[in-house]
Amino acid sequence: MPYQWLPPDGEGDRLHLWPYRSLTRRGFALFIGATAALIALPLTVVLGSPVLWMLLPFLALTVAGIWWALDRSFRDSDIVEDLRLTADLISLTRHGPKGRRQDWQANPHWVKVTLHPKGGPVQDYLTLSGGGREVELGAFLTPAERGQIAADLRGRLARLRSLQP
Image 1 (tube, one colour):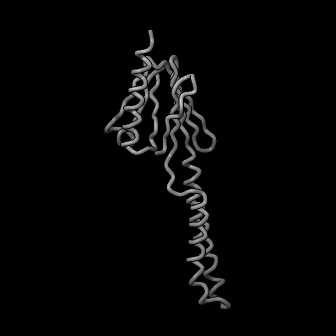
Image 2 (tube, one colour):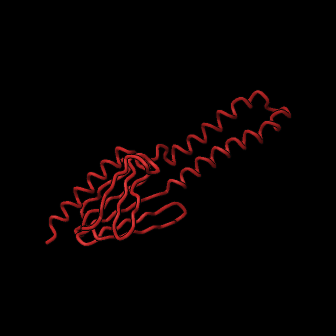
């Protein structure tokens, strides 16, 4: 699962979320190599003829296009969300593509966890509201994972609220 409740560090709970990637960097390199080899295989028939030089630029552009698309997909999914839950503060830090960072903080006593079954940009859209703002959490996860996180988070917030005087 592309999320993990980290072990308590004495201050509170911490949830770490990231997008699922089915292709690793090593798999990326192997895929590009296999694609280039499979595209070059038919070129063995035209080795030594002028036809090779006419086909080669198009085949190179094909491999470069696949490389660019996969690399762009990797860069766009460089998202990490870090939720920290302590007795007096809940904070969410989202590290997005291109180094973009977004922060949100609120008092956990007033935070509301909402799972929108319909009407959001994705199915079972998960939001946290408090501190005058509503923020999304784990929009890149599957609906089942968002549902599990919502249930876990509600339970942890309820436990935290019951401990307060």
